Image 1 (cartoon, rainbow, N blue to C red):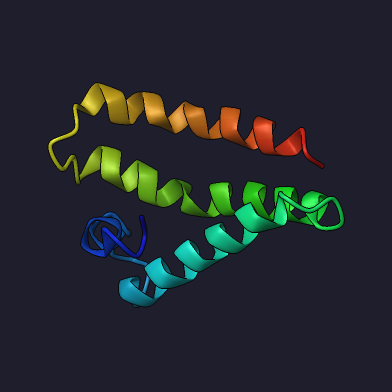
Image 2 (image 1 turned 30 degrees about the horizontal axis):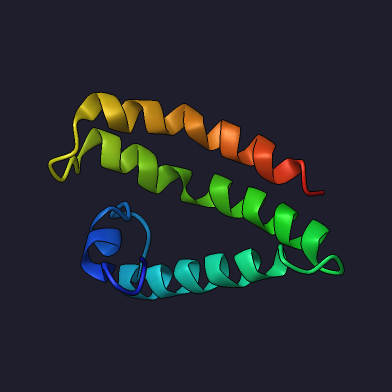
Length: 96
């Protein structure tokens, strides 16, 4: 979705992060590559660790979206999304 809804994803990148369009493309590409890496036994552990790092790296965007850019999404839903990052990190850790 980083490439299909690029304006949406670029808009939730906090202003202190430079070149949001480039960051969006990089994050989308990394997500895609790491997701593909999970399919193969030889790269699964590295991909899972990469996903954990990526989930940590994108947390500021999720926090910024909760604080400033609701984009029509209920604020309570954006709040629940924040601790879900921990669940996703735990899920990715199961593949290490």
